Length: 212
Image (tube, rainbow, N blue to C red; front, side, top):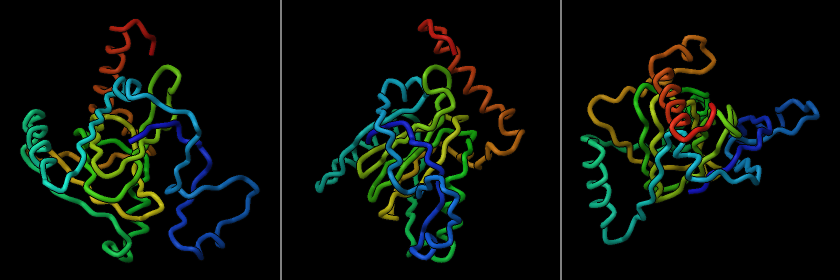
């Protein structure tokens, strides 16, 4: 896993070669959301932690010891349940394009989101808050063996990369509240989960003497 500032080149979803020819030429650079969009500006794990993002790496070994590690981690965090999700063109068929667009819409959840990558690769983008990265996209590149926890209330989005395949384990406690609330809706900013998240960040900033 590595994290860096997203380059902010306007994106379009170019899922098929013929789609490229249908993009209107505006003279501005246009990028596929699945490309790295690496600005070259690395973001530290410490910065992610300040945003409430937890990262762990549990390498998947042939002997299956990773399963014991995940079981122990789940017990430590109180995750009682899990399932698995796979995103591929073949698996989703005609709904692939609409699903990828949906995942990439900026949104938040009322529960934390936990993903452990079992295969393939992709990107989670999270919004910075306060300080040097205020409201900027931070891209987290995920691959096999990476685990990330996004706190409730954080604005984020997801996309596969150009390989167009990812399989992830989802961990949760009881019934997860993973309904996506789009940032494009005014009421999303007013949701309790968002207010609690912002308050937690501000309290954390005060504790270390940083303005937010």
